[in-house]
Image (cartoon, rainbow, N blue to C red):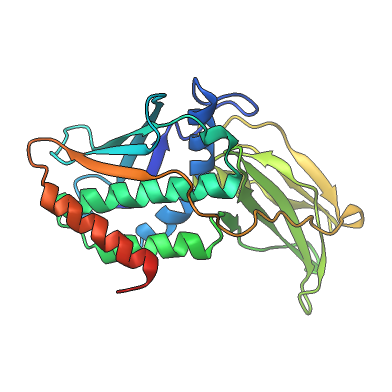
Length: 283
């Protein structure tokens, strides 16, 4: 069996600057889900949950007749993997980014808890991933390993973050090797929308001479790049601080149900009560 490593909304990427879905509510929801799902998956992958597949995929669509979010988890084993369908009411696109991110987390976590009850997964792993995502401020960042300059006076690394538009932003941080004093950061450039894309970009980071670095900020799964950017140590500035703000309460209720012949209403109710206890800290 595989180890459960990722949970993701589909589509997980799209064209930069364009819609990923047909409606604004679904579009903003799946784009916000990028940072939430990457952070949740970060700890999920360490939990050692044995699964038929390594990922759970969620599909979102609009439902103008609803006032809540409905997650329908397919609890009968499917030949093409583990998945759930999420129905979104109107108004998702006008939520504040952190309120929308908290709504994404609630949907993801409750859907996985429902699937855990059907598969016998340890829910404590999911609870840890939930807390990890909140403690991270519903944000996802990643930094590459350091690369020393010729002469070894400086070292550089690429630092990435997932923005609320679903795509990454990368800057290069440069430090003095003796003492670790930060020299500065380059301006941000558009990067890909996944951790795998971040790693592809980071692999292109290199020094040119003793005082300049080059990087391909955007590298697609097919190796396509937006081109190489060069920065000189003398042109660095202090990196702007991108604060999302603290997590906000999800203002839209979430309902999760199992679909399939093996669903159990009593089991679903038990998972709902467990989630309530996790949220209130009454464990």
